[in-house]
Length: 336
Image (spheres, rainbow, N blue to C red):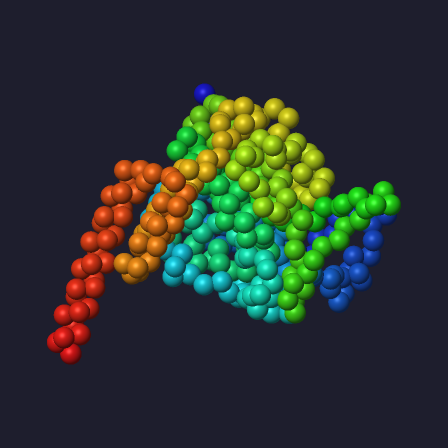
């Protein structure tokens, strides 16, 4: 069986001008003092690349590749800080002050959790060039569960590519006319998207003859409850390309080389109980005091959800660590 291969376009030579008419334009004169620079060229980082919208101060698209290896490791987001991308001119960059007090969270397009294999790769996801203003409940809830599903795909597919980004879609007013309006935040006027998109492309293995699987999803930048599942937000890839003005995975013949991801895989997001246990486990792991640890478990009891075996073991281990830490601090205090 032949292997499925992905190829990527080489960048066009600098200064090359696409001729749109039979008679060539006087390119040398047009370019004498340079064309306007939009800054939309692809910017490459350790494990993601993006195109940045200098006017809206958000990415147009962010592409990443994940595998089982990349989602495992010791990189810890607690050691990362949101900050402007040093490659973006400051006059076009969002800053943390734009987000603080705005009512919008800083939403990753390429998630930190996809980069546990590398401290640098994870830190780069905290550049504000990878961030959009996102509804907090959407960011911590449905979008988070989508990201977790993508990581889960690496259990069944050797390679997973993901493109994520913001959309500002038209809304029909009372007069029947469509308009695109959006909020901006901060002194930098960072654009708040109406929707977010995610395109997933997965390959079973490098030598597999199976078709690639593909799925495109558009979700509103609003809270989405647990009663909703991923297929409800699936759209045709061509429709998303029209909305965004982007062609996704241009080297793939999407008419014959791919299958619908939701036909091949589950497209099932984590349910409320399982998600609550997952979040609780993360809080237990990051607890730094016994008081905080007990508060986390108390919050879980209030939900009526029973801790599973993994959480019980994690809690006991963390409790022992914090007790030992407290005893050590007490001994050091007496010695001092």
